[in-house]
Length: 392
Image (cartoon, rainbow, N blue to C red; front, side, top):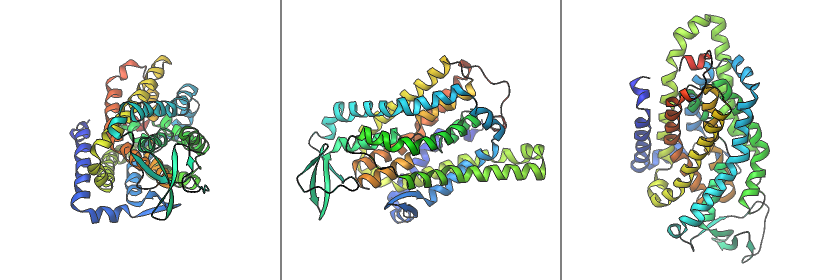
């Protein structure tokens, strides 16, 4: 690894700090950039600046993928089955349990047992003021009917939305940095994207316990299309065009080695933008963010550890084990933030909890990348690496 890649964690922390500082010193710039969005149902689903950064983060990875490897990866039952089991049969329920334990129990005295939050009424529900719904009470606030709920339950709702949204974009970066099987990662991105369309609303409604969660179909489809499908298509057609025009040797020797810095640079710029958008929220709620961050971090480490251990017990190759564990550990925080905003409101505790997911995601996932690289000897390795790994 180059000096730049070796100290990537340091650059990440510096970019997070730079983003918060930018949001504090130049709030007008941050607000203008944050306002450049594509909205669905009044919620900002796609940030145009972030979408551009994610495109340049994902495109180099997509170009490197040999799609014959994707087909082979899709036929591997054990890694695909393990990933689905972790993501949909385990992760949502451990998130619910851990968040409830900490936010509704261990940290309740710090959050405030009597503290409340105002959230939107569920779609299509019109109750008189004073009625109870779930754990909340209908109140009138600024002329609008709102649901007053315990604050810790609002934070819990945001954690649940993170737990039922497995990562479908950034995980390609984590798998790439861990030198995993990019074909397997891409297969699971596709499967998770489709599975989310079916299970997101079902699991969310069941775990939230405040009425069936409306499926944000438009938000999900738009997010998956912009963050995954667009760079995937661009990478596929670029690779095919270059191989036809210049040949495989030129593609490998002259083109591929220039792409890795593009991915990492785009990641760092993305962090500066994200934290400039949310800097005021972070600075204004430091202790609250700590109470939320602890259960989210424990959940991330637990799911990674479980996935990694099961992958070892199943004797998966390292190239499959690393992305399998990290796919379950990471979250699709863009969809979680958009859904929390649509369902509960931009100023809700649920929306704040999903923002904390952004705060801890990158440092934790970089830590897990390092753990994977240092423990790759625990697993059998593939006889030959695909192009994406050989050039990483």
